[in-house]
Structure formats: C-alpha cells, structure tokens
Image 1: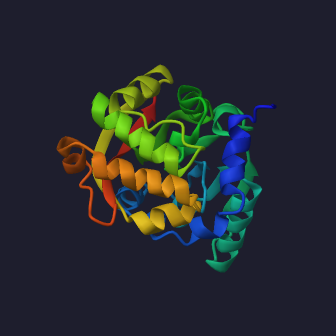
Image 2: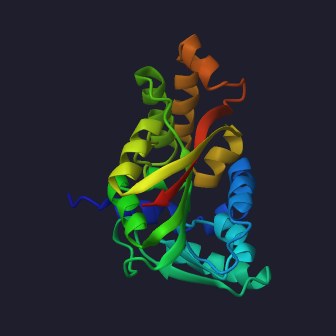
Length: 255
C-alpha cells in the first residue's frame, strides 16, 4: 500500500473546507488578533507574510495595517477563497502564494513581518517551519506566531493530542511553550512577549468544521466521559463535549 505524504493528508482534509474556515467564528475573532493589530499600529510601510493562512482571517486583519500581505497556504482552494474575500472586503494589497511552511518560495530577508495563526500544529516539521519564517524575515523584523499550545504535562498533553488527532488526521502536534521557545531561539528569533490565552471550542462546530466522521466523534465523546477529574477540570469539559484549550501568541524579533 502506498503511503501518502503528510502534506497530501493536509490537502485531503482542507481542500474542500475553505468556506467552513472563511466562515468560522472562532477563527474570525480572538484576543490574539486584537493584540496583533495593536502591535502593528505603526507598520504602514511593512510587507507581511501570513504562513498557513487558511481562511485568511489573520491576513484580513493585517491588510489595513501594512502596505502588502502575502497569504501563503498549501491548499489552492484556501488561497482562492482568500483572494475572493480580499476583493469583497476591498483589500487590494493581498497577494496569495501556494507553499508549505517548511519550504517558503521567497528570498532571504524579504519581509518586515512574518506571522502564522493556528497553522503550526499541522506542519510536518515544526522547527523547520519556524526556521523558514526566520529566514525570509528581515533583520530586526517582527515575528507573530499564535497557536494552541500543549500544557506541557504528560497526562494533559496526551489527552490534547489524542482529541486533536481523532478530530483531524492532519494534526501533528500542539507544541508546548518550552518547545516554541527552543524553536524560536534556534531560528534566531528573540522573544519579546508571550501572551497566554484560553480558547473555548464549541464541540458541535469544532467537529462539523472538519466534517469529522461519526465513529471518531463518538470516540472523542467516549474518551471525555472516561477522563480523570484532573483532565476534565483542566480542559473545562462540558456536558455537550465542548472544552477549552490553552493558546499563546509569541512576539519575537529577528536578531
């Protein structure tokens, strides 16, 4: 049996889901987006890159704040949706480019700002993706990286990764803060600020957005029902299976 590459698994999951992500309320808003907007208040002349743009919500927030945004993603359908939304929203400074985070098709020191949001946990090579973002960032440039993060405790980490993978087989890993710290430092990115946040995931919309098959949905619910109190309390598991995860926004500068 031929084994699919990880990127092909990602494409299988997301090629037909562009509309679901464009219309996703949990992706369209958030404290991290508000914080990013504040950080870029004086960057009107900047050229920015959004890696793993998905439905484009980070791109749409960046566009009015900078001179140009390049939205980058593996899925052509996502890029087409972003281009359509850019036109509908009157954002002519958005360009799109198909690429994986681990092999960005840009020259060294191309961008003033590089950013990624809720994408890094899909990369097959997390540290390499961070290194690529650093490579295309200008010296002194700003890196903004937001994602779900592992609690860093073995019990809780196992539960988080298991629920994520059952819901979406393109999931690789929610890195811990320590893993983010190490990857950023290795890439020459000095952390200036980390904002720790919490994000509630409404279960019905969480699985519907990914069109998770019913056997996996049942498995997630069964696992949650049998979870230890420490797990249920940490993730604030609710009767309808909704739960809450840790997220973080990493603000770093290229040294």
